[in-house]
Length: 387
Image (tube, rainbow, N blue to C red; front, side, top):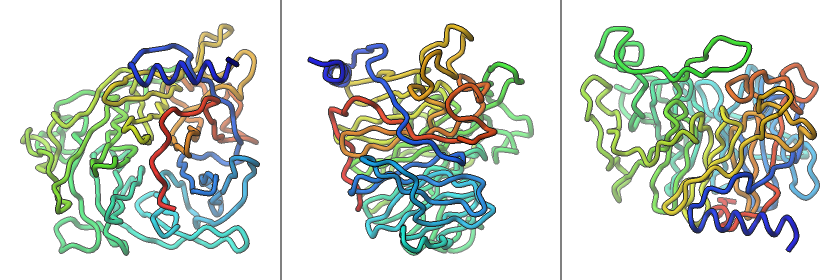
């Protein structure tokens, strides 16, 4: 058996039996980008899609897996700093950006400019569609933990007390404290905790992001990555699509805040969890940005699949002593394309990736982002794609 086959076997054993096998997977850069990136998605034709950040405009790129190159298939109007991406069943691409969500139909011949689909969603970050075509998003770095449902056709969430305008705040992931600044009932600074990220060359960075990546399983449950706690939440709905999970267990938080019993898993290996993706066995694959790692959690498995090895020259995990194309640099959004696992790398300057000028991509360029793919095949492929 060759090395690739042996590694694939080790990953299969890891998933089947929940074993923690160090360095069972390896990664290689598929392509680099001249702008920073964060979101990643794909289609049924073997293509990945990502969007350059802080461009003028921000280009939407299609990357063919078999023959990778950056093909512009659309543009997000400036100012723009796009995050999450998702396709709907009709083949339209939706992009989270600032306090709005935009959409376009990718076209390499005449790249379109995206139109606004929804507004009033400050901090919109991860995006995911449910079985009924509703688009869900969370409020990211605002730290309030709001999660909205946007009905087909789009709308606005600018004022939650107004009649339904195509968008509604459904629940909140519990913020890191209950102060008035986080819309709790306790005067500032409130009661709670701050996850303070320790890193070289900088003051400690507080982490308050609790509603990051989103993904639905085949039963219609919504999973939400909690970056600050290193956790995954599981949210359930009744057959009519209304929230079934419990809220309001702590009266010092906003009334629609989820109860803590809906945490699916909390684990130190998930500290810095960003984007998530599910395979056909219901396992949740997580890009753990602050640890430069990939983890997998499910009914029968909880394991770290990969983490950058220590560079013995520096004692850090932000670069490789031999080949920087083999490391992750702040992995953000994972995507499962059949049996292939890939993740975007945004090269953020936090924790294991600090300082962020030590690897293959650097904040000053000319390469500012990259997509890395696992060298081994998944034993359980990703969920069927909408297009």
